[in-house]
Image 1 (cartoon, one colour):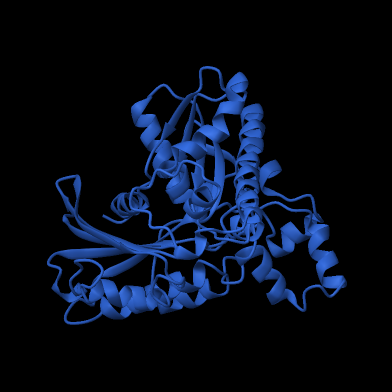
Image 2 (tube, helix red, strand yellow):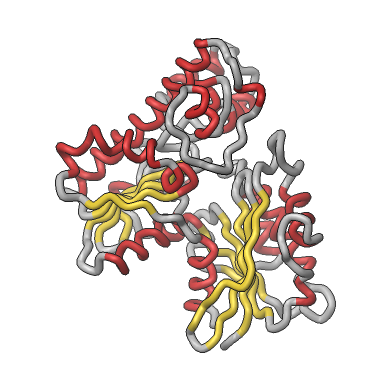
Length: 384
């Protein structure tokens, strides 16, 4: 089958699209665009507003779905599908309703993603385009075959058996994309550690392209320190906060660990790594960065907190690299991706330079992840 494939990728604060043409086993990008800072001071209110910007040609040159000739499929990145959705899935209102029950597990991602999907389903059903199928590709699918000793938490086995409390993993589409790119560049590579550093951050250990461990778990809150998420912390802290009435309820607790922790929480300045590098007077290589006037002439205490947040962030990554290096028995390629991982040479060097005694001959690469192409290829492989 030949035709055009449209892919939407909704992140916690971004909405991206790519329009592909697939002809004679060749996939090419026709158009692409994005809206960022959704829900933040400098961006649109929510993802539906961002989607309307794309459709209205204000933020990207995206025509109405009804006017895309030869459009045969629409793909969506969905963060979490649990055990119920482990492979690419055709979307309809019934499936969307089923996915809504997982909103509490990925509250920063699933709700806006499903809002976008619901609106796209309506658009793709207009003006004679009712036969355009929508498909979900799940971030968690890449990790569906993790070993049991990795997947199961050291809790009561009953929680795993009856409630499916287990490690699912996230950022799977991104990790799979960069790992496959590394395998193309180095065909003899066996052991890869993939590090995705963006709004969310995770690290994955792979042997021959198959993940054997990953830092995120039952939810995207586990693992590395992130821009607003805490990552790994002592669970006793959460119990203490509730028992001591420092937090009023579970919703407030969730807000703390999901939105008010990480770089944002430690620095008390910003969740944007570029802001912290600026405040800390450290190298910041983004030529498009525009400093917020509120960050100028801050008291010295904030400079120190920015440095501390950066130090903690990099240290957490180093710990996971060391652990994965050990379980892999070495590493052929260490690859960085994500807005921070790909975009900041300073952060990459700060993470890797203290590990040179261990890394030895390990190649260090950085690749801009292409989740949209990965989703399009999944559609081609499983649907066309």
